[in-house]
Amino acid sequence: MRALKTEAVLKTIANHPKCLVAAAASGSLSFNFYAASCPTVEFIVVNTVRSASSSDPTIPGKLLRLVFHDCFVEGCDASVLLQGNGTEQSDPANKSLGGFAVINSAKRLLEIFCPETVSCADILALAARDAVAITGGPMIQIPTGRRDGRESLVANVRPNIVDTSFTMDDMIKIFSSKGLSLEDLVTLSGAHTIGAAHCSAFSDRFQEDSHGKLKLIDSFLDTSYARELMSMCPAGASPSITVNNDPETSSAFDNQYYRNLLAHKGLFQSDSVLLEDERTREQVKDFANDEGRFFESWRQSFLKLTSIGVKTGEDGEIRRFCSEING
Image 1 (tube, rainbow, N blue to C red):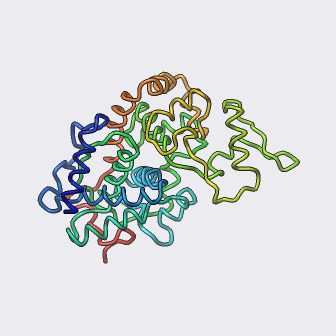
Image 2 (cartoon, helix red, strand yellow; image 1 turned 90 degrees about the horizontal axis):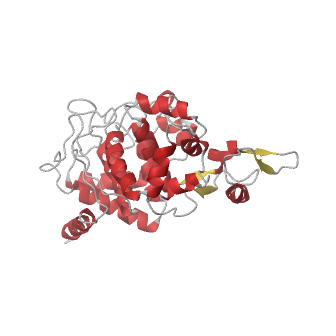
Image 3 (tube, rainbow, N blue to C red; image 1 turned 120 degrees about the vertical axis):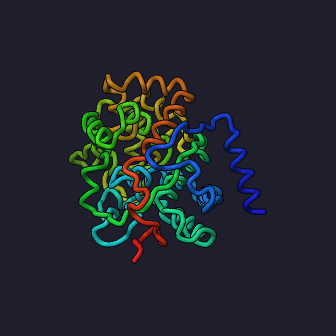
């Protein structure tokens, strides 16, 4: 009965007018990879994501951020999930990552129904895909068949991820090295339409004065929005405080992010430069005015993102536990 209920839920999602289907697989991945070995894999993953998100609405944003931090470092091989000294999780940029429990929960279920069959890399890619769909974004069919990496090094993190203070040229360099275009950069930045950030992620837009008060030093940021941010994140604020990436519709995957940019309410410097730079300004305006166009572009760019540097065939392994390599 549970499997039938899950299938019905997915059919409902798939028939939603916002749903989109990817046209082609990438590399040696396949849309039907688990058709015989674990046909319920996507049902199990989406149910796990839904259940976790119903009790913690921050989960979708965390899963989406997690897949970015995985795929940009060593490719989409679940290396970010490995625990231990000197792993990717040791980098300060990854200390605030979340959503690990959701991936581990799905893995435990899959090890019961399909032991040693489904990779943690595929679970993460599917979970991030589902996180977008359940918050109102497009439902995308993505290929599977990724294998898990056996290496996770903290030294590989910093040269491969985008920092919130990056310039446009900095971001282009990173994205280009991953085979992603300028259009992909603008599109995938739309992930900031959900999720939250710690105060330190945008502190470079303010400066503390001699009285211990913050003042705005970034003229591109809307002053009223800046006051809201300074109120939520005053000087000396607790490192645990978080602020929604999107101040308007924080729990919905929509095109509000781009509308925020037009209103000079991009939370990060790396957001604001998308409007400041003439190379990306028109695309920002297009997405702000046409959610359907953003969703169509997201379909293509997310497929490319989750295909970066994948390990297939004899490469890597299928981990029994996502937090550690086998043997």
